[in-house]
Amino acid sequence: MNRHQRRKAAKLARRHKQPDPSPIIIPDDLRRDIAQTVRDVEFDTDAPGGLCFYRAIIGWKLLRLLGIAGKLCLGGMIYRAGPDPRRDVVAFLGPRGVGQMIDGELVGHYWIEHGDDIIDFSAGDWRGYMSPELEINLDPDDLSDLGPIQWDVEPPEYFWLPSKEAWPIRGEATPPLGRPYYTGWAGAPPSLTLEEIETSLDWKTLAAHFRFNCQHYRLKERLSEVV
Image (cartoon, rainbow, N blue to C red; front, side, top):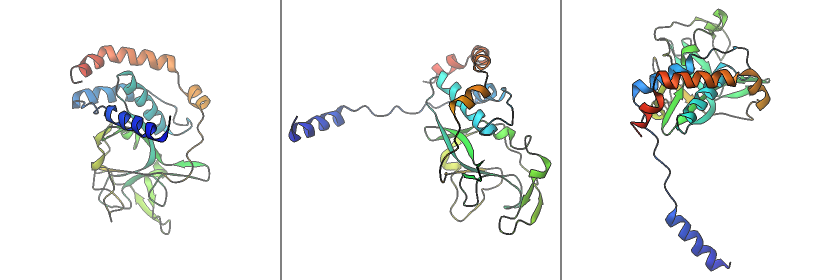
């Protein structure tokens, strides 16, 4: 095939290329029952990658089972729980405002994105799995004690919101009260292996859990009504 023929073939391919399918608009009640299915799963908090990783991967698997094309995302997250923008935050990010590996430890967060939505099934864990000493926030500049977090607005069980509502606001290091920021990632990602994932999760039990909840909540039938 000569250059003229290649150009003609490429032009024809572009002309017939199908647009990407539009993301599915999922009603709030169906979102709630999908989230409940994910959040009913209990995990070992010492599992590699952190609890948010397992919430994300289990949620991603369930969404795929339902025919919802989501993708796993790795970055940083900060949530504002109280009036003080420095003390009253839950922060899964590094000093540059993004997720990263520091001294071999994950300082970041996992979530799912579907279309223009951010889906985070781990939000309901953020306070319950924090030890009392972790609720004492430190000033990032001089590491002085800022005191315990004031939980005026606890995180919901999950976040499923338009990504534009969770983008950092220029000049504002922390989000408005009751809102999260989702940020990027810097450097090499964690070195989680498939073997670590497989040995940390009981996929047979999870499959049975998915089947039961799909029937109990009629997830597939309800989803077919909005596709």
